[in-house]
Image (cartoon, rainbow, N blue to C red; front, top):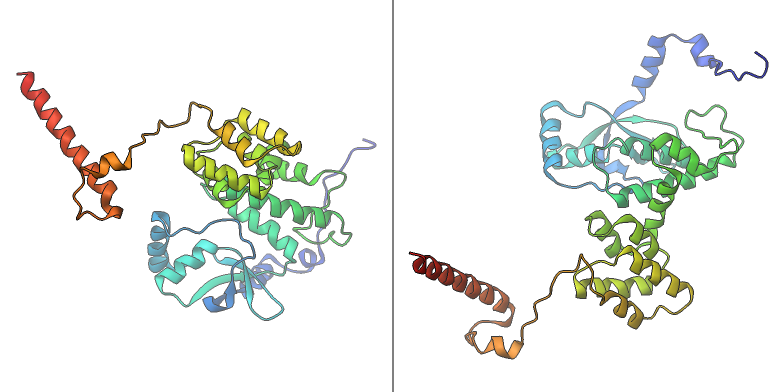
Amino acid sequence: MAGRKSDFTLPTLDDLFSTQEMRDDAKLAKIRDIPLELIDDFPDHPFKVRDDEDMMQLVESVKERGVITPATVRQKEDGRYELISGHRRKRACELAGFETLRCEVVDLTRDEATILMVESNFQRSQILPSEKAFAYKMRNEAIKRQGDRTDLTSSPLGIKLNGKQSLDVISEECGDSRNQIHRYIRLTNLVPELLDLVDEGRMKMRPAVEISFLDEDCQRDLVDEIDLNDCTPSHDQTIRMRKMFEEKKLTPEAIQAIMSEQKPNQRERIVLSGDKVRQYIPKNIPLNQTEDYVCKALEHYAGYLRKRAERDAR
């Protein structure tokens, strides 16, 4: 039995000298209805709150039954409250016309609040890559700061690294591998336009990670080429871009040359001569309505060809 590590934990003084009923009453005392105008969103909250169909359903639920599970807030030094979990519930209350939000007030440091905020939002059924990226980054930084502290023995959210790397701790808790978490955190270096492509599924993780090593100017040049060619770069292309960038050879012309290569995900572009098309468009059609006019004309012509084919087949 020597050397066996025990998982036994000592009860706190509160556990020894209070009943469960007393502890429940103490928790209820921290639950209150707080005016929405006094509740601030968590700084740099990485999870998006959308006014979508799910939100409308939540609004109807709040109108019928109220907020069943209280949001979690902590009180700031200026007397206002910082929202830790419950951003969707807060938005639903706003849309429902409520003036208050039922909240549990907790006593947490900023790092402890960050950890709780990420944990509570990771329970969502759908999380965008960008949300996961910034959440992992915030949690990683909070755990690193806590790992250097010596006063966390009594805090329920205090995390001591005990020789582990912060990414290893997150991996054990969230299920993603250490390398995958590192890839997600790299995504936070992308400009918003490229990060949107990842969220939309138009760009895969590995090419996006390679691009994250480029500076902002090169990323902006790449965004222009993606728009022009209507395609995203392959993993091989992004590896070459990163290598050229590290060698200080990645110019706008180099990005253009790489992106002009034919790729499986590139859509065939149709280029029309403005002079040729314009002669068939009435002069009273404004320039900003030209595309709509051409599409309607093509639709009409396609209908004509279809009817002629049906007639010839008789």
